[in-house]
Image (tube, rainbow, N blue to C red):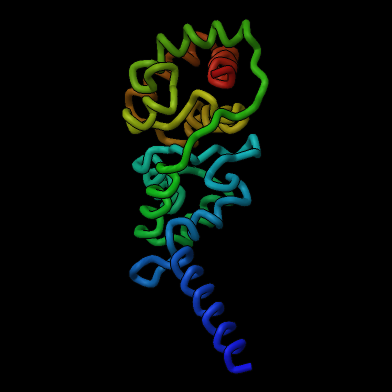
Length: 202
């Protein structure tokens, strides 16, 4: 009986040790993996979103993740849910999350794309977006250039984001602002839709 109790105690201790390894870092705070669990409800396990209005976070450059979360936290980036959620994280926790999601493998969203519009979108991308979002906005170049992933990202999410940029609700870097406003002035909402179809088909 004593041996059984001793074995049970050892198993419990082992379980607690493993749990601590997952849920706490060396300083006693939550681990990067544990922090990511709070994002899974909307952004999917390991940041692979299955909800078209929520972007995939897997593979996102760390700098982009941190900048975006800090924007939500400060209110510089307009949001409803994320504005409240971001305020609950410390700067150190946001940095951990940035590390975690940057190491996850990106997978393109499974979605339809209009081939004819995508051809037009490819031309618009080359003219207005390629300089910063090179190689068609691919994940590889997003990481290298430290910009957001466009190719393979969810179409509805990109649509909401571009509308916020065009309307002035969300601030843009000067170069992006000039390019996007020029394109929208010439092409209108049809140009935005063509870009979305291009990225959705990548």
